[in-house]
Image: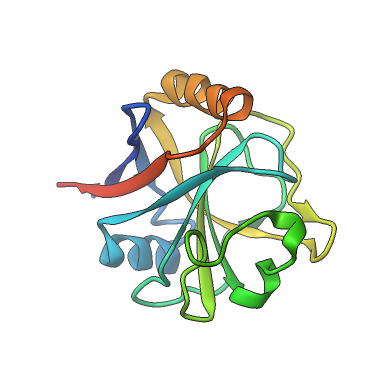
Length: 165
């Protein structure tokens, strides 16, 4: 039976519904599902292009690499797991106290709202992400919100993820 989650940009009051890709990424989908609800500060991608994401505490389990890509499509949801030190370069602009959880690991849950994304980072090289979901409702609103975040900033925005039961 298909499973769905909602993803909300709280400040902009935009909610989308996503299908979990259980057949393609069963470990990642289960780790996400078991960890919901999840929320964290939202940011706009600096390198990847059309990406909005949140840093959250590590999930109940780390699924490891699964259904990875470096070229996510419009509407794709991706999971990334970084060491806290991998994102400590001042060039990223994150304030550790407000953005990066203090656990030593940082989970990045990303939503891609446009095409031609390439997951490469000047410090880390290729950064493959686990594609675990796809937006099935509300994509136009997400595209508009992503564009607004890019042009007007992400200050004060939060991503929240919840189950659709």
